[in-house]
Amino acid sequence: MTDFIQLHILTSYPPSNLNRDDLGRPKTAIMGGTQRLRISSQSLKRAWRTSEIFHKCIDDSIESIRTTKIGTFIYKSLISGNQLIDLISDQESENKNKKIDETTADRITSNLLLLFGNQKDTKKKDTKKKTTKEELSDEKEELSDEKEEELSDDISKKYETEQICVLNKDEIVRLNECIHRISENDEEIVGILSKEYKNEEKKKFKKNFQEKYETLSNAKTAIDVAMFGRMLTSNPSYNVEAAVQVSHAISVHKVAVEDDFFTAVDDLNNGEEDMGSAHLGETEFASGLFYIYACINRDLLKENLSRDEELTKKALQTLTESALTVSPSGKQNSFASRAYASYVLAEKGRQQPRSLSVAFLKALEEKDLLGSAIKELNNTREKIENVYGKCCENKTEMNAYTGEGSIQGVLKFVAE
Image (cartoon, rainbow, N blue to C red):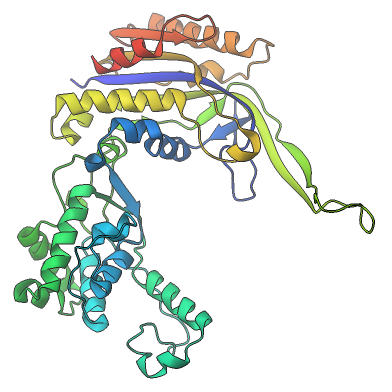
């Protein structure tokens, strides 16, 4: 049987624009026939895993990097002699590798990228356009600053992957060691990576290279990967199933998105020639009390963390504290809409998980929204248990509305 931990959270945000759509408006959804304010689960998870709480509680060695630009950094490391780790962390060190010529670096980078995902198709209609500094060596002295910048952009885009790659720190270290061996002209690895592979040869190369050099790691110690999973399209055997599921946050009441017309005043404009503002603008916002649901498969989380019980407990507490205290960063400088959760119901058990969002299918209209939301949440929970039987084995609450419970109690509960 699987152990599940479920969090039912109520958090109130004042006027804000925490998560915008393609038009810059706060995201919304229709629920129960009314428009609700919404914060996507992706926005919530990113805010949590990049928060100071997360970084403070979790050692750097067990975090991951999400990027489409790993190929660009590999290429730059090869041609510059800088350590890959230093380039990624934007640091300088005296420990340098030998530089690789650009033609060789290009082939090696393209082959290494096969391990992580499909390389973006960056072919241009203008086939005469040159994309490497080596090809432009005869004209290099005549290149303008603008062309140099354009060239750098082309090189950067050339080695992007179609999908975001999620790499843990151990895999970055292995890549760094691989690049060092290449710089030392290790005949075996340079020979393998300097060849051109086509179609079925690519699959064989990926399999053989991974078996020999173990660039990708089975040691699933990156906590955010253990929680939220990863997918490598070119190496599915190194996919990680997410142990944490997070709902879109949804307001418990109907919402109308409003417009804020604002101006910026020029402090040095004395009004002698122009009485107008220096800038006029408009932004949209809304406020709401949100219901957030998270379901954690504790057994899968532990398995993803190489069955490390202490690390699992630490991960559970870190995730819970982040979910209760960290806000998405959207438009925070404009609205300062940071908030703590006002209420959380935490449940543990082996029963099939279920959200309690149905408690808010009918939009709340009471003036005391928080008090009503807490009441509806618990009433719905009790009614579900009346017809389905016990839905969890243990539970605890923290209620900032009444001043009952504590975050320390909740953190202790989820880790036990």
